Amino acid sequence: MLALDPLESRHASRVLRMQEGDSLELLDGHGECGLATMTASGGRKRQAVVQCRIDSKSVFRRGDVQLHLLISPPRARLMTEVVRMASELGVARVTPALCERSVARPDAGQVDGRWLREAVAAAKQSGNVFLPELDVPCTFAEAVELSPSLGFVGAVPRPGTCTVLPEVGLGVSKVAVWIGPEGGFSEKEEAHLSGIGMVPLTVGQWVLRVETAVGAMLGQVIGIIGNDQLRCECV
Image (tube, rainbow, N blue to C red; front, side, top):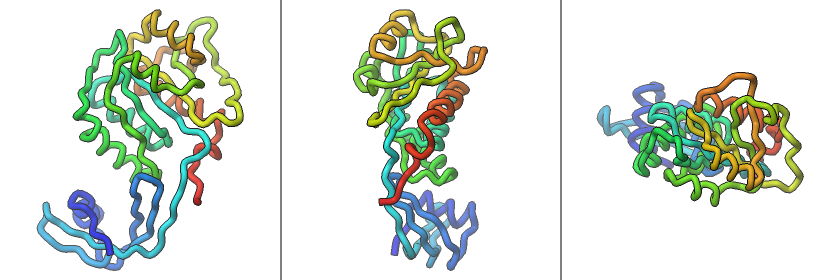
């Protein structure tokens, strides 16, 4: 038997209006997925307790390639959108990088608060059995140290930026996706990212907002890598 925590209990009993005997899917965010049956529900509205019986369980592993999103955080509400998209699209790690032109300067407290709640909600909606690892905000230099050696950097449309992704070599396990602030990376930051091998990538002919660039760039990268390498596989 398993008792859901108060938040999930309220959601199941008050929002979804589930009753004893109903089936539900449980995710732990670390690769385990269980099919369960609701056996009991009780308590007051804000102290609801839902108990379940686990009927079957599957364990998954991440795909062979993991995406690491390194992003200059936009304003608070928009950063939660970034986390939501990252969770739905199967990003393994999100690093907020404070760049020279970054406007928003979130603190570490938001990681385990609003951002984590948004990641959990997105995982539940999409069925992704893995939550992304959420780093605390760090400097650009610290983010560079965390970055995989292969990856792409979002660039404004200009001569020399690519619109077709190069092949991702066999054996690569982690791929970086860098997205800068609204004003773009500074020349010094662009040079630094180029120096560590990041490939400039532009999506379309227009300058995109940060939150738009997240979905567009991740979609491009996932398209060339292939869902088969990102998809969870049962072990």
